[in-house]
Image (cartoon, rainbow, N blue to C red):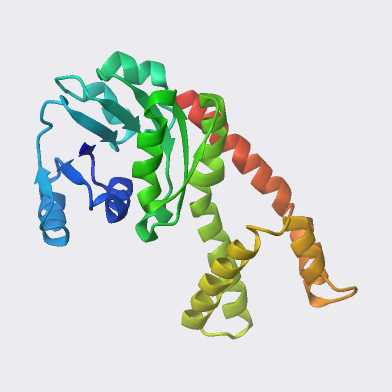
Length: 247
């Protein structure tokens, strides 16, 4: 199986951490980035122009707005696109391939922990899941609408979680804890809670930590005053609506 990765910026580069073991050609137009990639991955073929798509499983990792000016030739064995909001219909109209899949990974691909959503042609499912499982867990969805919802849940939310991490750090620093130790605490906290949530319902975990008239419920009361849950629900809707508008 020959893989052609078109675009090796932030997300494409993150995916390379897991994909590098495959027979892969990487296309990156930005010259300084090409030099950087060749230093990091000396054994990969890295080029600045897109070859014929014939015979390749193509992973498209450019910016969505760049699709209109993309120039390609040949017919890919399969196309896996990570372009947010770009429908299968648009992909079929622009790029010739036998099969198509849309995917939405996240930046945790850097450490092979992405939660990646996929949908599209069933005949490309196994190959797409195999490839994208190299940098995390894959979730095959039944429709593009479900994938557009998941764009916020798994694609955009790392930035929201990072915002929570920064806010928690600010709160601890405000009370007198050193900044460097707060980030170490938070990283360990998120890692541990993530593992627990694989088998524990979030509401049950919250209840187990929350004692009557204790420190946790005091903090929850303040979070509810700030309408934190309402804000996250609205953030999900805003992400979904923006994804639809991009499509």
